[in-house]
Image (cartoon, rainbow, N blue to C red; front, side):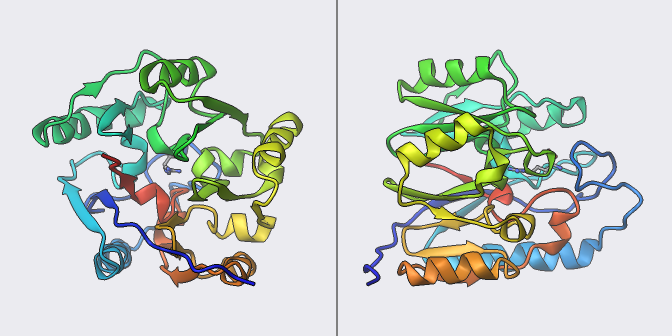
Length: 270
Ligand code: ARG
């Protein structure tokens, strides 16, 4: 029997893909010789923003900067819990210049921004659940950054090791349904991390590799609606059976850079 799921209004920060492109390769999805259809990317991105607003969520935008083709992936810019902003320090030199414009945006909105000492890529790898911060490492964010995050927020950080380069960020392999539960793709994790997840979330929704490769785990859930890639059909069916309402949003152009719905969405929790 499915439960009645109640949505909670969210505040999101996004960045228009005006300068979006695939110009370098820092994950296995990126092939600089493959053309991005910028027109289509813009339409897909505007549709995502429209869908969020239609569902009652607040969407803020940061001005895109020319020469920063991955800046559209707002999730990587920070992680925000209780109005406290833990900024980013990108692994790839190509992405390092993205941090200052995001920091500036947060500051003009009245937030202090903590500048980390260790490599960390915001909500790409640092996923607040309400009880914990689930934290990915293996490709980008370092275990030292996990400790820095725990010290900063005073929230238990659960370190999880990612092992499959296609799922180089935690938010490509896992998303939060509510404080109690998550959905994830087990094989993206080391055996020990799989055990940790099974222990913490015995009732989790487990996705297949097909769902994960379709960016189905790069979803955003507001407690009731799951904004999800349309090709992740098996995962969507499982979520519907649990009482969630799936809302398909196609961001196929962004998959060429290794990103999807969640990557384009920074959540501001205050
Ligand atoms: N091309 C970007 C990178 O490899 C994609 C980032 C996707 N963001 C995310 N939150 N997973 O860094």
